[in-house]
Length: 115
Length: 113
Image (cartoon, rainbow over all chains, first blue to last red; front, side, top):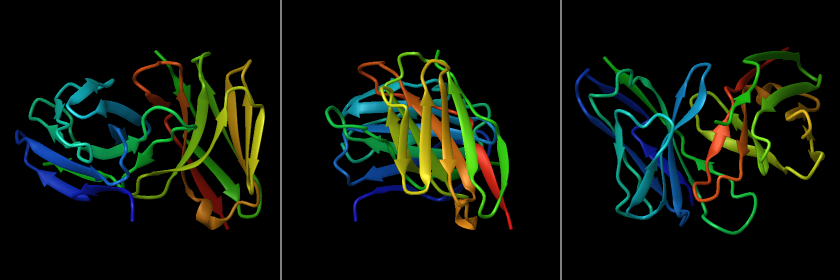
């Protein structure tokens, strides 16, 4: 079945450690996104990528890094520079160009807790 | 930048209609979306409306758009316990080249038996 997978579902890390969240899609989508969700704050965009080997900062990129070496993969690294990393992280993808409404499809999310 | 606002909570009796409201600031919005998030899960697109439309109906869902007031609403008829979730409004502006969506804070819908 086509879809977006995120792993792991729950992740615990000690303060000061970098951690990488996985996002894989087999929808052949060109664009991929990372969001952070905190209670009462909705979704905030961290990074997005429209094509392989290219990505742009979103609204809250500080303390995060990404790579896009393959079309189907868009891993997110939460670095020790991120001051408040505990949150629910959502990955999304979308077909680029043409068509309407060009909705974003979401993965099931990873809940990161930093101890 | 763009801003999308929603009230955080709504409680509705089972069988009644639910109306979830959203306001946005981007006058150049092209599409507006409603997503549903069940506990511990990702977001699922419920419906969308193009900015040149006033209304869209899809089974129990009715979307109303007042472009002059930049107000969007989602009406769920005959609300059921399975409708309990967080509902997000999102808008896509004419920010060509980056295709970003701006999401609201989400409205948590609670169904009262």
